[in-house]
Length: 381
Ligand code: PMP
Ligand code: GLN
Image (cartoon, rainbow, N blue to C red; front, side, top):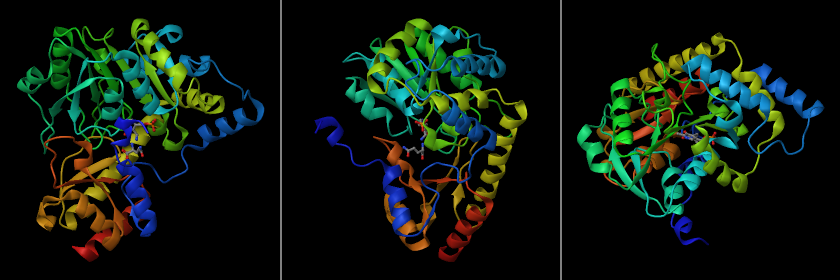
């Protein structure tokens, strides 16, 4: 096989989900909700499947969904987006990320990546011939400094890839942090690929700020979203990119040879969903916030040191006090087999200077499932 791709093992999410099944564990590893998703969105997809068009839609996405994306950007962020030239639908945010990186990077270009980072970023940066430069965020607040950016950016920087809200750390970047990133992107005449799949999963009354909305950034950012997260339907794999025409065009070149298009009935349902009233989006965040609090309290009562989290499906917890010799992978293997609860070792999101005593738990599960997981942990700790 391809030498670069062959050098990677199987993604940690698949590994832990399979182990979880084998051990009959509660799967708080891979991030996905365990409910059916919004009934009206499902019904819209079903209707479109049975009565609508089921042949290839336009490679850029269906007009309905692209118009809905522009409407969503105006409603939530005050962004004026031309749906015809500035939106594209992809088969999941994973494809959006891949198309952005393959479409924009030339061999030798430097790419600034923040660690911890989602596991698909680095392999694709490397496939595209990009040279990674890392900024390591520091627990417990996953902070970074001007000096960190100074060390990572250079005249060869093509783009920075930022995931906000951040999986797995549950960090939501503050305005000053975004301003600092924007300053460096502009100073080095670079671009920003913004993985904002958790844009609606932000808690405690905070609001997500797209980097694209900062002064000087409108024409330097590619904003990526995912219906999987916004509608709790992760299996659908409907994603989208919003970007100025000169950045979207090269990304569309990659997309046309990756998946070309995305199922039209799902696009119809996501178009409908993006137009739902404000109450849907606040209920989504409020419901998940309550689950974050439920799982965090349970983990604390079982002896875990839970780090603060402001968004996403995840909480991270420090396991130093349980021993395991600073080996989060060994801890997770033990936990799934013995306590029958699956979690994800956070070191999997790093390539260098990884913390080894932090693990990630997913809380987008029914309350009784969270409670049972906590009971199992109590039995062991
Ligand atoms: N980026 C991040 C940070 C994610 O957590 C995920 C979800 N696993 C994705 C991208 C991929 O999203 P999708 O399922 O829409 O491809
Ligand atoms: N994004 C999800 C997570 O972080 C899972 C995605 C996947 O399985 N690749 O757990």
